Length: 573
Image (tube, rainbow, N blue to C red):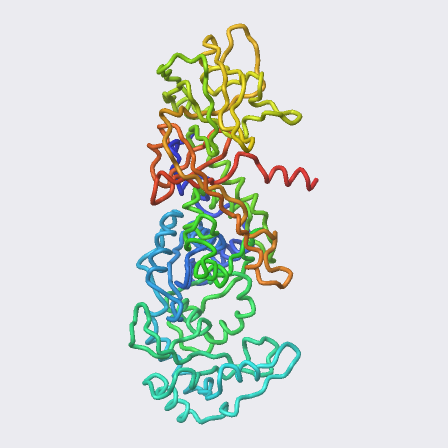
């Protein structure tokens, strides 16, 4: 079925485009194709993925990653990785390292050396002085709060700063004083002089530089003034030779400022063009870095790489294959308007990929002991169990069977409900690849809780088949008590209870599910001990489980076996 039968995903598998652009293109690719056909940018295609290193990448970034790198690959161009590191207060080298590792795991290969906006701080500063020389920038002494109030709002006029008409010479002297440390943090800012009455709020004299006496993760204490994102972003694109600056829809209102900055500079080459697409939104998920950072810092989760988190590292720990993430974002496509996708669709791609690749194993998450009263004392049978029912090439494994077994608590009922076909007094069931057993009675404690089930087995049903042809309605998994390995298993529910956290105007954190993770002390068959960290197996009848990246005795349930996406589609018809 697949070369990745051991559960390791292949980033290059799944839906891919090779050998040039597809015949069916989204609107961004259509634009790139039209540009190359017309000879714009000399026929070059160059994109970039520009994360800010102030947190880990999340599933929303995956859409941008595969779009930008995909366009470069399909049109014979290049895609660079550039960190937009203009805010030293929130950025760290550890985030840089994590982002680079996540891109590698996703299977994308940035062109050339990794780049940083901080590489261009000298050029950005020089260009800021050139705006001052052209009378297009000025130093403002007002506080951030006052500047924000004076901008007004939609339908409300802006108020010009009393410092807007300073002379070029005074502005230059003040700006250099900002650079040289003559003023306190927040004491002055450099603003573009555009139009305080513009309908687009981003054109109302935006701030280009602010004073921050904070060490930068790359430049240290060399700078105490830092460019804003809007000043650094477009100019970094231009310096690098980007042709198509592809970003998410929330930056559409920034585009006139992006263009204004570039149009008023002496650029070394063609001016890049910004194009926006709809970001990825998922139900029961929040992708705001502010919220994700709060989840981490306030202890709602164990870290950015917690398996409950929608970060790439969290999804990897949980067992989501890179190939499934890629196939999912390609299925979602590239649109011009925002929408929200059911998280069940993502899980269906994960399930499909793992169904092809994951080996089968037996584990009991909530153990209940079964004692086979007619089993020969001390005897152990080794039964052959297939590793993958749809892949004969995956072979079989030998699993020990003894007179004491673990089964799931849910697989026994003293008083069964209607249509319950599993073990109950007097009923016969099949144990996977082993024998038929019949429950005779059960042992309960003082609280009435079943603590042991007693049963007899039919020795003529070895392999799970009765020679007389009789049938049973249930086949159950099991683990030999004597041979079981102990494992810790994490079962997951939605991190956010609400389908659209925060959509009603409330803080999305009020929707955090305190029961999003349930931890169980499980019993697993011995071969589970051979599962390497990060690999995924299917625990039969329970779902797909990933061995933790740091501790292979810990397993995370990746997804269940039920196709919830298909059920949603049926209910919507």
